[in-house]
Image 1 (cartoon, rainbow, N blue to C red):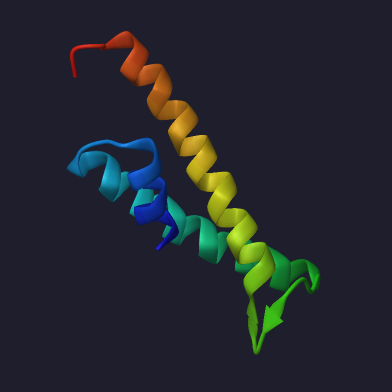
Image 2: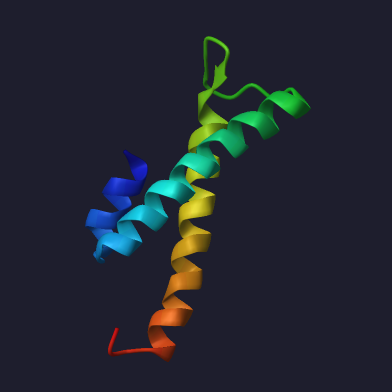
Length: 78
């Protein structure tokens, strides 16, 4: 859901949609895993560390977008 929303906000083709969906899923589970490993609880929903999972999603999406901007600037016709 976050990847699709980010795609709508920033625009892009099918490749970008797939990239954002992958990054949002990977960031979500990375944030959850990181939070459960260190034992921090922020907006926990059952066994899911939802707060840090959402933070991880936004971090991965922002980083992926930042990397894709550099590539877009090098190839402006694509």
